[in-house]
Image 1 (cartoon, one colour):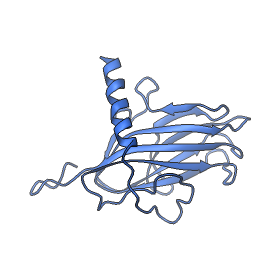
Image 2 (tube, helix red, strand yellow):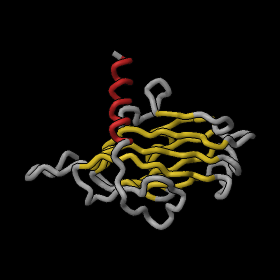
Image 3 (cartoon, one colour):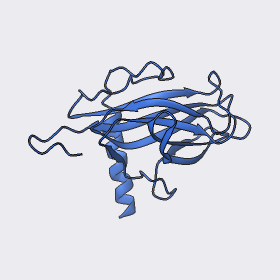
Image 4 (cartoon, helix red, strand yellow):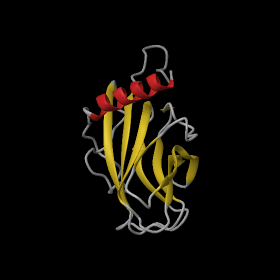
Length: 177
């Protein structure tokens, strides 16, 4: 049964990777590559967007957060993948989670917990690693995704891919959320 869930998640992510929406991020999200984000007006759509978190250019101290994507209300995030394209080389672990506002944590490691930034590798959220949102998360209100450095970071480059869909409201029922 567990293998079937992974296969299903893999198929969803493959499908989502084929569909990328071109919409604008907020001004502070200047670390993206590939996709350009999502907006609440993009109802009934799937998306896969990749954001480059460049810690070589934008250094972080231990405990600092790189906010990289605004999630509009009515969005379901199906999965998050972190590809360490350039290793830190020293000591770096990082988490990816969500924040209700800049500086206000919802779940610091809801999507990825304790990923190793010292070697080039790819990390995907999973039940096995204990991530809170291993099966995704529906957002009734807007949120922000961020990467927190558990150690100082000044060399790593991490490409974060977010897979999701914008949930259409159901007439007379207030929507799915």
